[in-house]
Structures are given as structure tokens and as C-alpha cells.
Amino acid sequence: MAKDSKAAPAPAAAKAEAKKPAAAAAAPAATKKASSKKPSKAAAPAEVKTPSVKFPARKRSQGLGGDILPKGRDLGRFVRWPRYVRLQRQKKILQQRLKVPPALNQFHETAPANQVKEVFKILNKYRPETKSQKKERLTAAAKAQASGGKAAETKAPAVVKMGLKHVTALVEQKKAKLVVIAADVDPIELVVWLPALCRKMEVPYMIVQNKGRLGEVVHKKTAAVLAVTRVEKEDEAALKTVCESAKALFNDNADARKKWGGGKMGERTNRKVAAHDAAVAAERAKKLKMMG
Image (cartoon, rainbow, N blue to C red; front, side):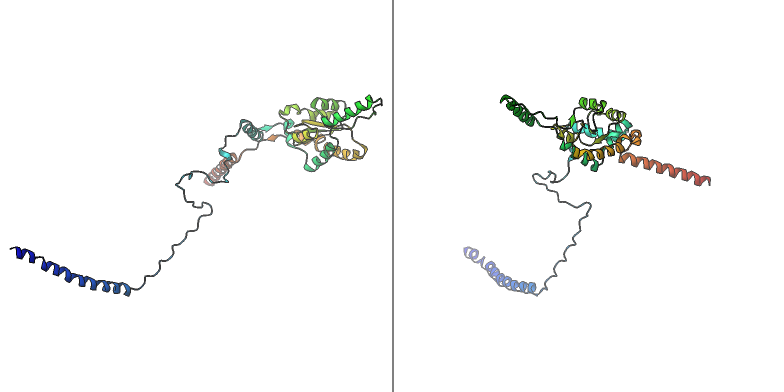
């Protein structure tokens, strides 16, 4: 029984050895079949979709910082602007929407650029002296007087006059030859009466755009009004030309004193009004067609 148990595994081993050459013979056959197959054709390239010009496709980034907006985008609509900026913008819109009386509307009709250029040529030539220049002049006069000499008596130079009260007094005395008023004075009630006074006293006046530019002439941050009382002989012809143009544009312009401003609606309101008018016209045409 022991001999039979030892001899039993022999047929199984023989079968395994018989399977090895068969597997070895099958491997070259498989390689031959694979080599005999024709090479497959290359896949056709996928059609590339051209992005829409109006709405270009952008791949969304899911990583860190993917929710950050791209650079260069205008975010002004989402900014919480300071209160003074909001008030400025609201005031500008209200002045366009509401009806503005002629006394205030005249400050929206400023002098043309070529006239303003000529006016500022004269104003810049007769700028008042600065504090340092005045100090130097007074020091030199004091030194001359202390040394025993007599200070030279000089005539007061021709300079631009500033200050609302001072200019008003010059206009009432008819000493001012030209008055220049800033259009953006706030509150406007400070100067709203000055054009009427200039017309009554027959003093030429001109309304210009920027109070900061007027202030620069007299070494201040801003100036509401400036006045020219006299100029040198070489500038009298230029001043006369400017005064004539100022009279034609402002003093003698009766239409500007009667013209109301404002009353301009926004784009959204204009679209609503146009749609309403179109609907009314369509309804009227429909009724006429039914009656005819």
C-alpha cells in the first residue's frame, strides 16, 4: 500500500510536463497572429470649437484662490464710495433731472475755451505778490530807511483783486473793468446775485469753469471771484477785446437769462416712455382699423 501511494503522483507530473510544450507552441502562434494584423488607422482629430466672441468659455479653477476676480475688471459699481463722493454724484444727477431756474442755469453755460485762455493770460500777468515777495520788499524798504536814506516812493502795482466783499465794492463803485466768476462755487448762493449786479452797473463779467484755477492765480486753494481794475498800456487792447466778448456772451445775452435747465431723464426712463408711446400708437392704429 505504501508503494502504491508513492507511485500515484507520477501520472500527474507527466501531464504537467506534457502541457508545457503546448503552451510554448501557442505563444509564437499568438505573436504571429498579432504581427499579421494590419496597423489600425490613426484616430481623426476632434473638431475644435471656436469660442464665442461675446461669451468666451473660461475653465474654472477649483484650487486655492480660484474665486479671486481677474485683474483689470472695473469694480467701481461695487465700491462703497465716501459720503462726499455720493453727494456730489447725486447732486449732479438731480441737477439734470429737476428743472433748474435761469438764475442757476446760467452757471452751467460757461465761457468757451478760447475766451478763457485769453482771460487767464491777463490774470496770470497781474498776479499779486506772494508773502515772501512782500516780506523782501518791506525788508529792503526798512533797511533803506534805517541807513538814513529815503525809501523810494513807488506807485501801487496793478494786480488782480480777490475776495467776494472786495470785488462787490469795486463793482458798486464801477472801478472793476472785468469780473471773473467761478461756476462751481458751493453753495452757489454766494455768487448767484453777482451777474445781476454786474449787468446793473454795466461791468463786463465772465463765468469760467474752475474755482481752483482762479485760486491758483491769487496763491490760494480756491477763489470764487476775481476782478481786474487796471492794466498796463501794452495790455489795454487785449483787455478791451476780452471785455467786448464778455459783454456779448453774458451781459447782453438775454436768452441765457431766460433759459431754464434740467428736465433730462435717464436712459431707463426714456426707454419706458418710448415703449408707452409705441403701445399708445399701436392701440390707436388698431382702433382706426376696426372703425375703417
